[in-house]
Length: 356
Image 1: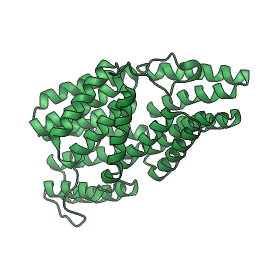
Image 2: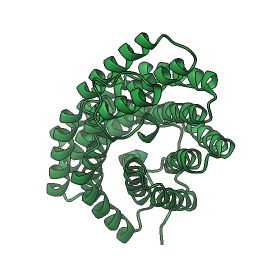
Image 3: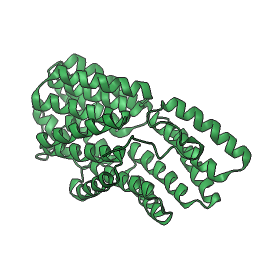
Image 4: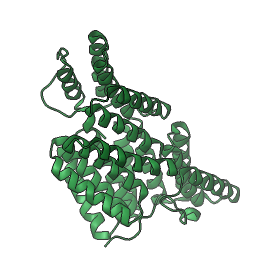
């Protein structure tokens, strides 16, 4: 049985904040508490409130502010001798690094966070840090290496009745099945994630689950209108909570759904919107994936084949640069679909629609 979802990253005087609080409200409360703690010289509280500030900035897509905030939180935690708070700050920094596409840095910071979490006796931050490492590997397409870790973390979350972490693990495992072609298993797992997150009032997790369901309803069942309705429901949550990154990925998925339905003009417009949103938050992975969808849409709308070929070649280079190991396969699939030369192709692999 799962209890109500909670946000362990809201700590100290901010533990009363709801997991569903608007990020703008979190940032306001965190900034106020941070200033009060600094005036009082309370280093531990500076670290804890600074963590909420860092996470609010990160999820709002404010990269520079998030980077400054997690580092300041870490310094304050070190000054206070609070090992667990140091771990939480490193977790935030590692998560930000992954969001920015800096995967080697993300792995280093998250591994340090897991180690400090264990040394500091905080099983939650240790679990979140290991989850971050697993998600980093999953995003890069290294399913064999991180699949078992996802399953281990899912088992631990189920055992402790942690709804939010259970939902995260289910969604990650579902995405790997989806990308590997097992659509039925992926659908079952996303449905369970949606049910648990709804019962636990985890609106962020529910929005991601709805996005995964929309993808599968579109690609497996060809039900465009239901997929779009699911995405609209998820979008309302993203807007209510100021989930900037999740909203951009929602728009990219809407583009995917419309592209599959051969509604190329609408898909083009959604990809352009998502591209601008990812660019504003300096998220290179989402930006590259939106570019790929946009290139495909423009090709369908009559773009010159040589321009499309050049764009796809540039994207292959960019995706490999940021560490997506299946990048050339994704581009090869697009080239094959569009009847463009496959000099950079490798057989198999995921498509743009298959990447979260």
